[in-house]
Image 1 (tube, rainbow, N blue to C red):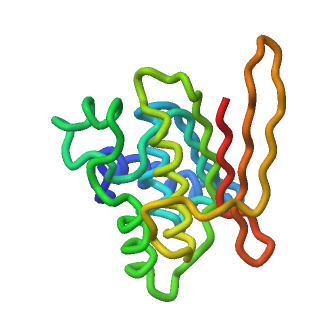
Image 2 (cartoon, helix red, strand yellow):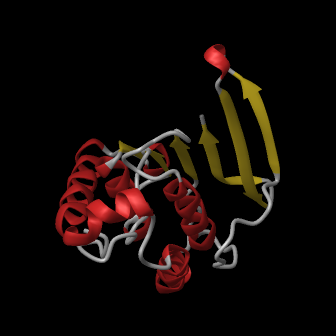
Length: 174
């Protein structure tokens, strides 16, 4: 799936079919998913970015965060076992002249006990690299960011990274 095969290829084929059949503009096709669906959405953005205009992932993993289905469960709670930013950079390089901006909205709860919150940071690192930022181990400082108090004493933090004024990634943690 993370290499663009399996479920990713099936969903990409379905998207292509709908785009052709109904003459849909790619600029109007976005993918979104939560948890495993978020990982699939992330993989589509990395492997089939010509089909979509943006990716939203809620509590999901970056493309290729787990090396196999067998390691996916421990990876969910411990964090990526691969260099996900390098995967994003490699996908960008492989795209050649078809480089396109694919913005990411990553949403994650900081108290998530199933999918470690560090996956949201990994997703942002991957999509920054996919969109031309250097592939680094740490997130670069955001271009904008703010905190907002929510009912019940919770805090929402929003950070954004941009390139040439265009939004590349927005990370929302609650």
